[in-house]
Image (cartoon, rainbow, N blue to C red):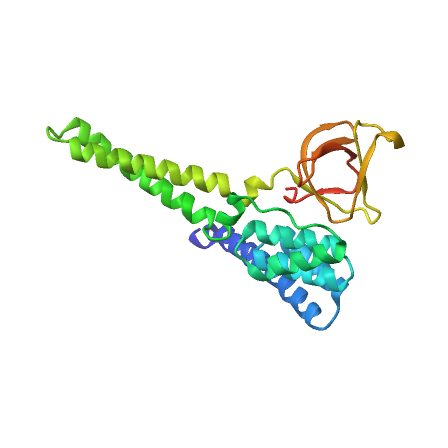
Amino acid sequence: MRNLSSIPLIAILCIFSSVLFIRGDYLEQARDRLAHGEHESAVTFFEKHIQSTRPSSYAYYQLGQALQKSEKEAEAALAYRRSLLLDPRFAPAAEALREANARLGVSPSVSGWQARWAEKVPSDPTMLLGAVVFWFGAFLLFPALAFSKRSTILVFLACMLLVVGLASCILATCTDPRILEARQAMVMSLSGKTLYKVPSEDAFEKITTLNQGSTVRILSTRGRWLYVELTGGQRGWLLQEDITSVIPSA
């Protein structure tokens, strides 16, 4: 009976090992094909790897390299942007994105203080540290108020820890690229997209034409139309076909 009861556990371990092997195999095949100049095939295997597991910044960067060598410049730029979402400090992806934007004729985005901060301080460790400090302050405050007669200094210290921890969590949230870029999207159409004053394809309402690779911030939707904001602050409407979100869909 003991042997029979161990069969489900063994089966689960085998399945888990198989999944890990397949995921690793996708990545190894992708890198091997990229190294041997089989760029289209490498793209396929990088995409399978990314879809099958939690992707890394480097995996998206390598996908961008394969796409670029397959002459898919806009798709490569999108991959580089996704690489920087996961690690804003990854210099090779930032440089590759600048070069891709130059080839596409797209002006680089103006970095705000949040982006500059994220390039220096990672969001996840800041959030974790802030949470630890906050809860340590909370646990310290309770006995200081409940049991200590001379607790002024201890209460002050606990309150300071609460404030510092909370401020760290808020800062991490405000500078997290995955939150900042949540509404960002990229024009993937080879011919670009026309921006209109109103949700209508009337030529008299045309504002400008956005190049392939241009990024916009989606403000709202109306049927097939998106109300967007450009990097410079100009707003308008464009059709949602061939507009891809920078944050990958689940």
